[in-house]
Length: 265
Image (cartoon, rainbow, N blue to C red):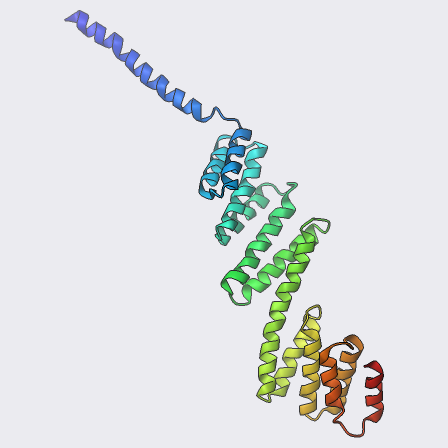
């Protein structure tokens, strides 16, 4: 009886040891891959548009090798995956955390640019009110200010023009409505905003012509003529100047001014 007990006591640790060593072996097999291999695997899934699996690989890399270059790069990739999945808030959060962790990283211009793109997409996809216009403008301005030599600066400038055009279009719609309703002062205020704040947009010639119209309807002929002169000087080849010129023709006793407009035209 004593022998049986001793045998059991002796054999039991062997079973426990075998069980333990088998578990360790499994854990070891997970970490056998080096950072580069895990990153390449994640990119392979990404290239095949298996974004969820790619994200899992990148997160495993960050957990196993948090200080490796591949791990740092994988944080950018996770942010980009969130963008592609249209999870814009999560994407912005990932990129903002990246900036906090690595304020001197070589790809920081791209990270700032992607934050701006996320904000921009929320204008395009969800047509939210003006708050995202302002947020996106500020984001793209940060790219231009912080990284003037970046490859993303040109596109940031183009996006700013598009956003401003979007804002100018809204002012033009409201201004045209006021003009139709004969609320000329309110209309003028809208058109002035376009001319003063969004002069780079395509709406500036029309805004100037609408101001000519509004002043004309208000009986403010001198102001109407002055706006027509500004329009003719800056945009002589547009249809809006031709419209203004024909309107000014209706004003009596202004032949000298009309001659000047004719010379411009």
